[in-house]
Image 1: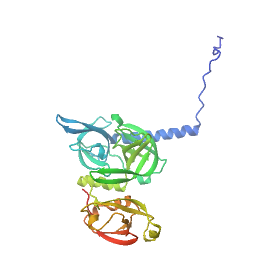
Image 2: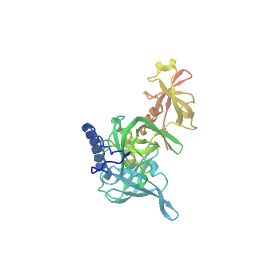
Image 3: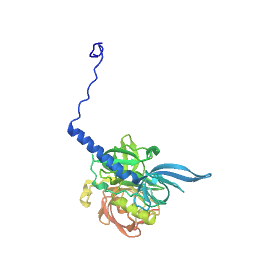
Image 4: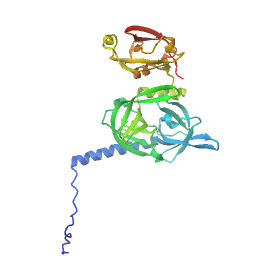
Length: 335
């Protein structure tokens, strides 16, 4: 070997990494700053839940998940499926080391949201945002407790908006509208945790892992704010009930001038002794409007079935065998 320490024959000289252009380094730094800022701001407001149930030998583990602090005096928001089942309670652990017992105030499986109350105050509430302002490609940060690893942070983008998520409670089925799809990594235990925008505002409650790189979150919007308010005041969500099953269907071309949309809801099944049966609704009827509000799909019909319509007469405008009809109907309460 020469005095200069030349490399042996056949050896490859180490390469020097190419410098990162200044504008790319600045962008990377801005991305890191956004994610770390959200994590520092929001992590104290996300709890690690250990859910317990009554067993023969006392309280036994029943699952785990995450929750978001809503108020300083201990109200927490989580996914209904995290705490589903009789006699559920447990403990909520926070990043500052506190571990508080919680009880279920109310749950709504049809929106997959549940409200909890921790025993102590002095919690740091998260700021709620508006999922309606999200855009595809926007940065979002997920904070939760996947596999029990408290305070885990993942980042990604909003990969799609306007998704629908079917839910069920006993015999009732419903679709959660405008679900947020993200590629931020979600795993078991993330359910009930926060999906936040770059300013640390919670825009969704993580609810499901639909595949690799595909997570779903219940949006924080006016509809979910009403659900939260009802759970806080009544412990449940009241919904009007028609007693029929239906699906989307394009309107026949000759009938499109009669409706405000090109699609409608076709009645597939009418439940026995239901408001729909008493009103004379039949399978194959096409529902065009409820009290003058257009019904272009099942989601429109669901949105109209609010608590204020329970026991109050509404007029269904339907198309039956090409003939337009108006059917008075009094919705019941979904139980």
